[in-house]
Amino acid sequence: MDGAVEGDTMYTDLFHLCPKDSYVNTRINSYPYGVVGVPTWVSQNGSKLGPCIAAGYTDVVFEPRDEFKGDLARNYFFMATRYENRIASWVELLDPYVDAVMNGTSYPCFETWFKTLLLAWNAADPVSQKEIDRNNTIYNTLQHNRNPFIDHSEYAEMIWGNSIGIMPEPTNHPAVFSAHNNKLQWTDATGEVLPDGYLIRASTVGFADIQIPVDEVPVPTEPMDKNVLYGVQEVLFKNLIPNTFYYFKMFPFSGTGASINYKVDGWVPALEKKTSP
Image (cartoon, rainbow, N blue to C red; front, side, top):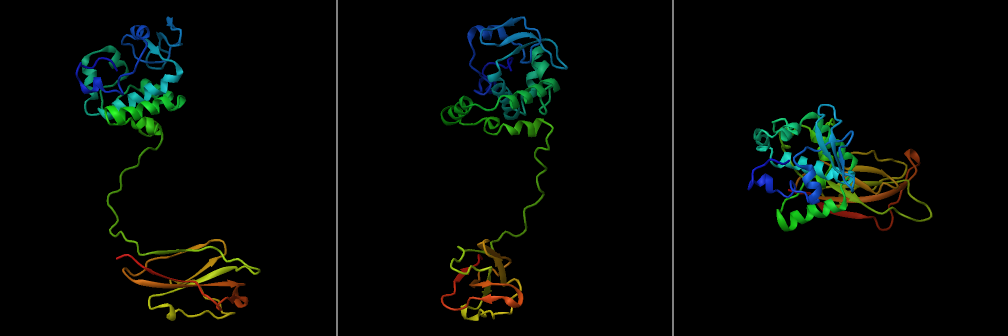
């Protein structure tokens, strides 16, 4: 993204500045990045210069090594996002190399061939630990901001790709936000005869108000009576009265229908909980 004005925040942004070998940097000149067909120059490290093979652009481009392609793509996505309201002004510099990759809009910002290239590089070269470390250093000690496309490289495809991306924001918040539910949890009973399930009964009056179930008379599931199978170990009582104490008792049972047998002797698990205001 060469061509910005000295002193401009965009020009000095550390996600715009990438360290380069001085000799290689002179060969890059102001050529845009791209994929080279037949190179006219190749460096010892594998980067090269030559005509671009992308559909839509055939002039000279610089192709970096594979391990830096994703880094560059994510920096481009950052700049287009961070400076969305000013990025179009770079095209006004009348730099042919800037015009080659940018279309003069705030979004999508890039020419189609270049956008396709950046998305491909972002996908092919995943975020490296070196990239993460640099992102953290810039955030913690220098600019105090992050490149979100390093933290979440999938954002690039969501914004510029063919995926569905972010859906429209909902119009309104819910009219009521409350916690008028009680979620009960337990550890399953053990022993020689394991229960087939549990009957959990609730009352707003007190423990003594909770009716003890009768063998051979199954209790249907209702708002204040819940039948839960063995192994589930939790149940939710919903739409309760706000700011109210609720009392719960749990009765293990074996069998079903007319053969159901409730355990009601001994200690019966009981719990008291108050709903939110």
